Image 1 (cartoon, rainbow, N blue to C red):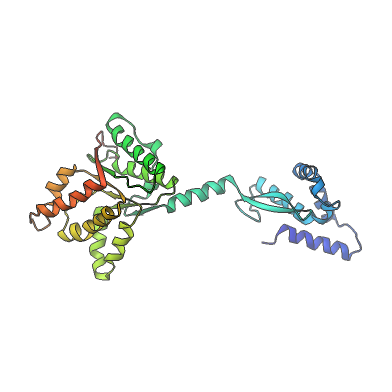
Image 2: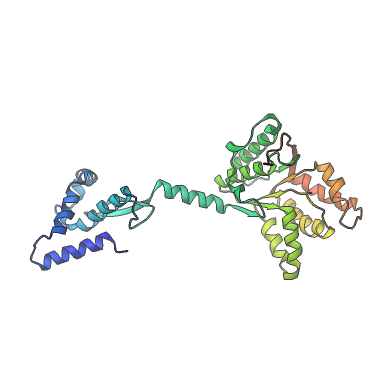
Length: 313
């Protein structure tokens, strides 16, 4: 797209070639400039800084300013979509600086926040979860309060280790939504969060064995500043996933003191006794389960969430 100022410069050049004769287009251009109240105000405000013939010498920029404003008012595509023109003084003449519109700023901010939350096999709308949209009835208030306390602690001292939450309760009470809302609050504070649906991730890890990129996938998760492991205990777990995937992730995070959240339908005791102890083959491995639970208990604090099932159907 040709810049308006370039087009105007061509008109002005033609005018000089024609011996100073004003064309109809040039007259209209000057008329638009002279009748623009913002240009008049700018000229008055910066009179001492500007050259005496500033309007003539800056005509191309001034007409670009008028034209872009009109395009924006008429909802037409401008030279710089999403940006607003502003008049500035440049070496005693008038120039234009473009600044992001409020809509563009909001869009950029939203995109920036989204980049601070990595989701793996999570619902697409989880990035839209907000504290204001969380059902704050009595059965959920304790989990919400502890979540907000975590956010405040991270804001006050982001370099210190703050244990996450182990949120457990029945299906559909809002555990995943709450962690998503907390992730968005952390994103507002420039803190990167990774959210992973663990049963789906376990399937991916088994498939990754054939492509030899298990370590790469584990590294991407275990090093996240804040990790939220969703739905742990939702399916049967092999010894390999328990020890070589989950165990490796939690061991690293415990050693590095990285905040970690969990959601589950099991309490911590139930997770240990009813899920982690017995592998897919039916082998009872209490010591391995206890070792894993030591890491979960170090990384998080247990909180129950109850209430009615919010899921449709």
